[in-house]
Image 1 (cartoon, rainbow, N blue to C red):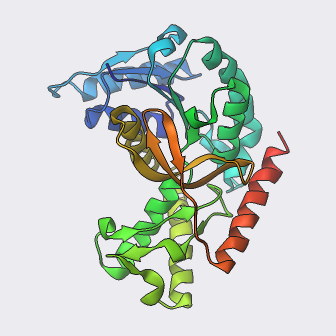
Image 2 (image 1 turned 30 degrees about the horizontal axis):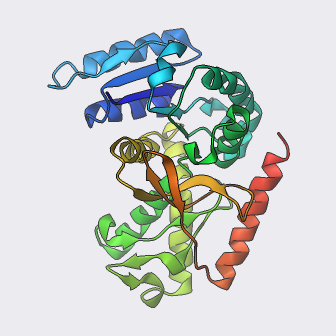
Amino acid sequence: MRKVAIIGVGHVGSTTAYTLISKNIVDELVLFDSKDNILQAELNDLMDGQMEQNNQVRLIGPNVAELADTDVIIFSAGDISIFEGNPDRFAELDLTKTIVEEWAPIIKDSGFKGILLNITNPCDVITQYLQELTGFPRERVFGTGTSLDTGRMKHAVSKSMKVHPSAIDGYVIGEHGESQFVAWSSVRIGGVPITESLTAEKLKALDEAARDGGWVTFRGKGYTSYGIAIQAVRIVEAILNDNHLVVPVSHYRSAESCYVGSPAKVSQQGISESFPMNLSESEEKKWQHTIQTIHSMHETI
């Protein structure tokens, strides 16, 4: 039985739940939320939403005992209203660190032996805090990191170059936040380095378009949900199917002594390999800056 739990079923958690169900990736889904009325509403709506599906997912209300045999916990707790007037993912830290402090011992004491996937922002710092407080092996605790940002980069490049996103290889790396950057030296279209096709000025414009992608959505509807949900579900599928997906997730890199978004291999065991990056001189400077940004925020906890 493929069993997943989601802690926090706001915009992101509920969209992730629906995506897991609609793609028939799970057999059992356990939901938790601090607001019982929201939780019960989502459980009811998700059940209604699968009435015409051949495969029925067993939906389970908040029961910590269910975590003992859960394969993956998705941690997506938070409060998007904190962003109002303060458009920075780090603005959530004061709240989300207290949620981690509440949930980490619960998860640890539940007998959970699976993979803990974090979405909650600031993603890198919260993922590291979850690992520190649960004491789980680092390879079993990681975050969605810059997987969404990489998707936004592919969106921008696909639109500009008029190619299908599947033809684009490459990554956005670093903090899932303002210091992230596109490692253009890694980006290829049909195997051809994008740096051979576009000027530095054009690449800068695409970088800004990719970076602004989330804010375009946020300014319009007050939150983002579909993009991050599909990335989380893609990662969960890789874990459950042990398919060794390479994706830029927030995982612990020993050389940097912190969690940060960069390419890693995801399998049933969690992070099975972290890939080295061959960065240009200018990209290396950006990398050092983003690492310092993460360290500085982690020091405030």
